[in-house]
Length: 107
Image 1: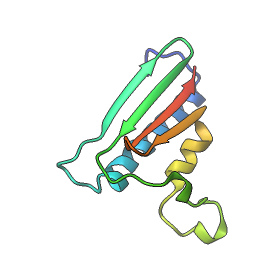
Image 2: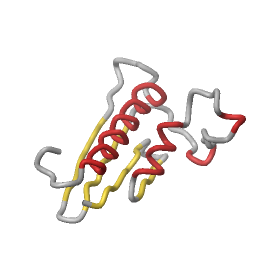
Image 3: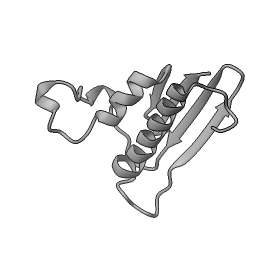
Image 4: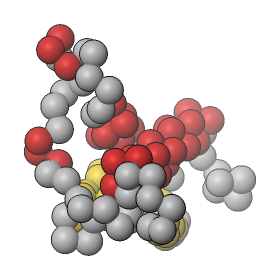
């Protein structure tokens, strides 16, 4: 990230989304199983950064994630990371067959 010229605000958003995605892969995907890996890739061109975070877990249904801002969900521990990713990325895609989250940021 030091070589990528972006605003401090965008740098913060990228860092936060990356940390949330990797944490979700370790905690929810791999369930802290130290025999499983989290695979991270980054592609960059002049216009955007594309991160792919892939775990070795069972996967999940993106549509089943509740909105953490709804009153009934305020005390539930999950869902906030994906909410932040939805808010801060230019686009995101979850590939259930590959158990991979792809996040794009325009630079």
